[in-house]
Length: 386
View 1 (cartoon, rainbow, N blue to C red):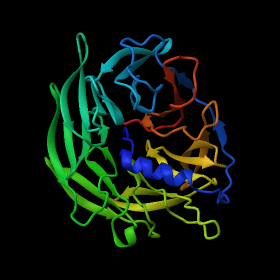
View 2: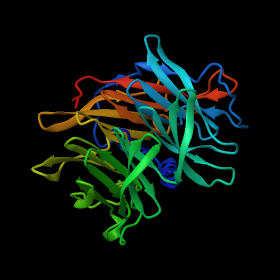
View 3: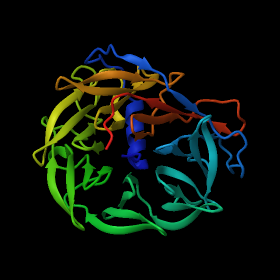
View 4: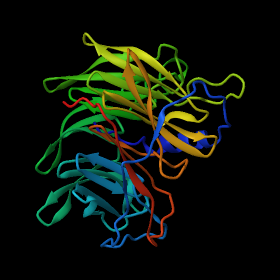
C-alpha cells in the first residue's frame, strides 16, 4: 500500500522536537550493509509551464508511487509532475497544474489514472484536488475538504474534521462509500492511518490514559466498517500510533516519543510489529532504536516481507532508513538505505511498492536554477506478491 505523510502540524511538531534532541547512546549496534539507491530521479530538465515561486522548487518533497508511475510535488510550487519508468529510466511525462494561487501541500497518492494531491491556496486554506488523466492531459475533476490520504489499489482513506472517509475510484473522481466517525474520547484521531483491503488502522498517538496513544483497527463487512480491535503497546508509551502501516497480516506502529533515555532524557523512539493470527492482531515484537537519532518518526512502513523504519538526526547530521526482514521469528536489520550524500532531510516522505521504496532529499542543492532535490528508488529482494 501507499502511505500518506503525517499531517503538516504533526510533521512540524516532530521535526521541531527531533531537531532539539541531543545525542544518545545507541541501544543496539547495527552491522547491516548500506544500500545506495538503485535509481536517482531528477527534476524535469525543461519544465513547462515554469513553476511560479520565489523559492526553489523542492523536487520530491511530496511523492507517491504506483508501479512504474510516480508523482512528485513541492510545497513551494503550483505544478506537480507525473513520471513514467521506461527502458531508459524515469522520465517526466505529464504535469498536474493547480489553480492560480495554489501550491502543493503535504500529502499525495497515485492510483492508475487518478491522482490525489493536497494543496493550499493563497490564504493557506488547505484542500485536496483529485486529478484524472484525459486524452489531453491531467485535469482537476473534484475538490475535497482538507485531509491526508492513504490508498490501497483503487480505494482511498481520507481524513477530515470528523473522522475518516472511505472512497473508491470512479469515472468522475472519488466516490465516498462510508465514513468512520472519530471516537469522542480520542485526541489526534487520524494523525496516521493505513488502508489494506478490508482493514483500516487509525492512529491516535496522544489518546488514552497518560496520553500513551492507541491504534484503532476497523474492518469492512459488506458496505459497513466496524471497530474490530483497539491496539495498545505492551509497555505503554507516549505517542504510540504516531505512524502506522499494514500489509496482509503484518502491521507496524511507530512511537516517536517512546523510551526516554534515563541519563540524557532523549526520546529514543520505538516501533511495534503486529501480526494477525486467527482473526486477531497480536504484538509480535518491539523494535528498539539502533542509533542515537530520532527513530520511527517519519518512516514506519511495511510490504509484509520488510519493515522500513527511519532514524533522523544521527550524530545530529544525517538520516537513514533501516530495512528489516523477519528471519527465524525475529525482525532484524537487513539493509541500511542511505542517500548518495548524507543529510538530515532524507526520507521525510516516502511511498512503498512491490519490493521498492521511494523517497528523496528535496533540499539537496542542484545546478538547476529552478529545482533543488532528488528522488531515490531502492529495490529489495524477496517481497510477497498478492
